[in-house]
Length: 159
Image (cartoon, rainbow, N blue to C red; front, side, top):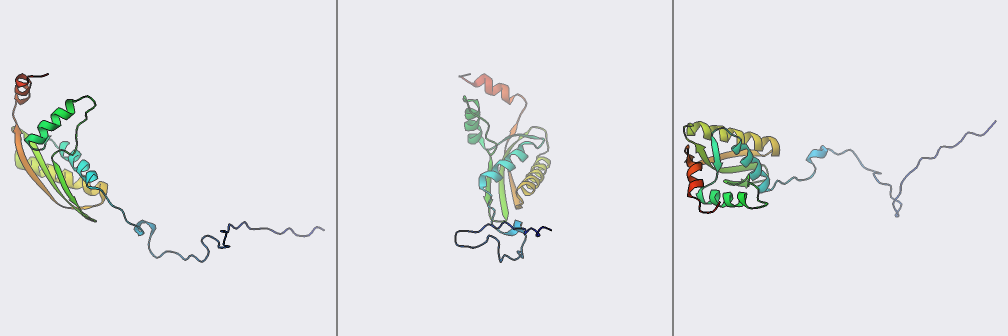
């Protein structure tokens, strides 16, 4: 008969002889709660801006000067739209407050657009970031009239 073979168990040891994980007990908190997650203001600005722009009745975002500068940048070679234009945020560890400046389409009830923007922005920011949105303040800075775009093109001295 042959002698029974001994099984060896591979153990990794550090140079000091310690075995990783040895003496570890189960954590009392789930892994998702150990550590800290921070969300930058720019993340919330982009999410809120996109949610506001997707709302029916919103023509553009921002005040007059920011829209003018944004239009120039959008037309420049390599320029791309700023989805955060017209959005300001204050972000804490668990909450966010958001201010939005809008231009609405003529004929659309402004209170309805403001309500829809507020709901869309709150839902998107809370769903994507997990932050509680404590307020969304809406400032309607202008109304887009039919023919405004043609007047802008006709009045432009440089194409």
